[in-house]
Image 1 (cartoon, helix red, strand yellow):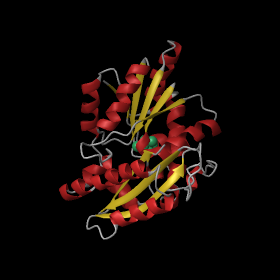
Image 2: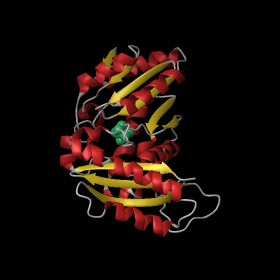
Image 3: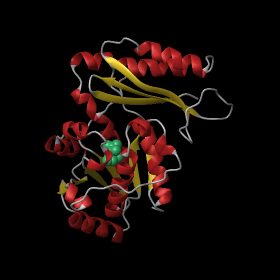
Image 4: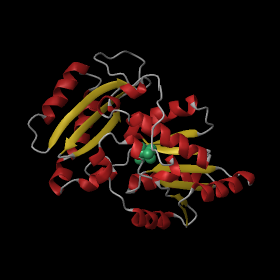
Length: 282
Ligand code: PAF
């Protein structure tokens, strides 16, 4: 398996692929790979002539330095995992210098308000950091299609907007959330949960499922109240937000309208670990 650490080498590969008219599937990651990432890679392999996976813990998208420092880094394990799927995958593991030079800063984007909802309220600057790194990575890799999990649904919508703003000819492919048997959405952060937290965190998906089942018959206000109650005084879990939002604008609603597609979004702390999830409602 090819592993590149610098832009020059991967760009040389990409230039060759483009000359050969190959399609390039790209899966950007921050490593600590799990089955959810591997499902993205599998899909990319079936839809493209070559697949590039990047592993880069992007400093500009962390608003909390401790979260950046504690983010799991398991590069050699990640490379081994990828090699179990296919030896033809090209891995790009740049340093921060390689992406940003000596000064890792974000471009300030206007994502038409998508960036101010939900995660944007709690993680200042986060989406500028994501947009910036994805723009840099897309410029280096020139992907035909890029694959993102729906667990970070707001990120997925913002990256679609980014490609419009930057006029990048990349098809953004959203992929369903991959879950543990308990229903907990797979996340690299799950590695930081204690056994008890891991067990208790299944409440997040059970709550979302119940909201989905009741969405047709209950009001948004009563669903919001019910969800708040589920987490009140819970010994292991603290609800940060629960919102039912329109899919196109990500604006949260208090009343349903006909012919509009909605999703429920949730963020919960299990100890210090922040977990997010979402579900389609209609
Ligand atoms: O979802 C992630 O892992 C990251 O936000 C991404 C898209 C790789 C950008 O750093």
